[in-house]
Image (cartoon, rainbow, N blue to C red):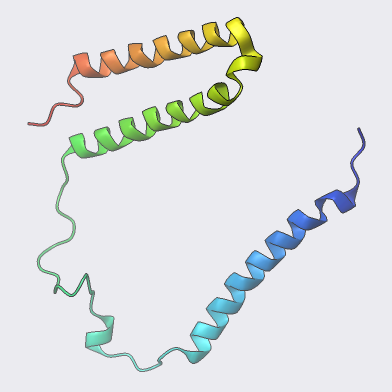
Length: 121
């Protein structure tokens, strides 16, 4: 199967349009945007509430651990979607492969629970 460079033109065109939109938006907002800077405009603003204290307070490592574990297991679950779509075509071999995949997934989950990574103190 031979491919031609013209087959890639829609992709190149899409990237050029996207890049052009970004550049155009940045240039237009820079030209039309307000130029006067003051202490009030340069002050941080969050949902209408004035900021207080230091933003560099330490977070518990448990928060980051739970977030990373969520992303890890969420990505692993995404791999089940193509299997579910092609379940009939894969047959028994695909079913056994998914059982092996699920066993590794559950093994990892039980390891995390045993180590207490999901317990908040």
